[in-house]
Image (cartoon, rainbow, N blue to C red; front, side):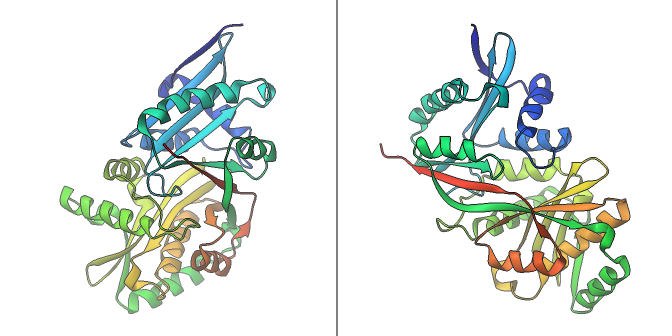
Length: 314
């Protein structure tokens, strides 16, 4: 049996890697969406993406990067995925050892990872290797066919009357303004509630890559009197059917005014107009303000992901 560990080739390996990943997803991820995610990872200051081939067949992959919004400050985020047909055959252990060699050079404070709720065996494997559950990032889905577009537009008008505007990133051209938007995203993401305190500070390069990878009409900014006060992002998760609301947040001093709710309504409006039938979002089990917003909008809970962490001592 021949085993080869090599760096991920994004263009050549992507279809097979996505196929392995989708074995563990409740709804398959779109190729374009998955590529955006891996491309954004590559901009992190610390990043490792590898695949494992056994007898010329790609049977697993692993990645690790710094600055994940769901990892504590100073932690690296890692994910190991093995073909279901090859589980309990040592593939995951080999990939873990490859990442561990890299971890020993970096010496982070710890490691964070995600495991799908539909895959309890992987959670047990992670716990045997020192990980403990922190919280659940569960998915929720909004049926857009049940939403009344006229009601959405009427609600948005009430916010406009209060001096708020909701426009795409194209409305704010120029490199200097783009950097301001990146800092807005970073500052809001750092304040997302987490069981371990504040989230890690996402690196500038990662945020810039993320924002540039998303279609500009899907980056929506809330402003009041020309001051940017909130942002929401959407990615097409299932082509022509489902949009993924990957991030929504408001600056600290403007919270409690329904801005996040209005941003999500603007996203819903665009999705309905574009013919999408569903919107999907991830929710932290302890981010109670956003849970309240999604409940108000009619999102229905779906299987999610356990967030696990493993502190390290050097």
